[in-house]
Length: 95
Image (tube, rainbow, N blue to C red):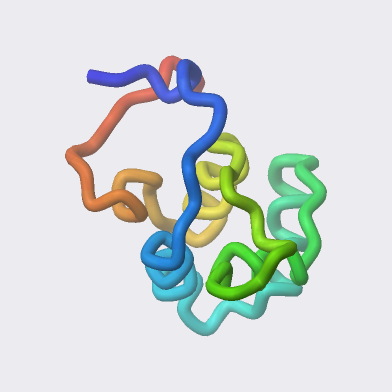
């Protein structure tokens, strides 16, 4: 098992962006950004979420992404981080 607190960032790519967009579904980027601010006090813009979902050909798109942000994004959407990576369930020592 892997403790999620041990991971600082993830190398980002187009495939992960597509998966994030699929997990987001019909929730607007603006609403998702507001959820992160309200629930986790984590400020992220809707434009940044768009860059995550569409990194291809955009020089402003990040090459790595905070694992904490990815956890917050997936949790706010009622999903789990393991779904983003198609991996077995992993654990966190946080409650």
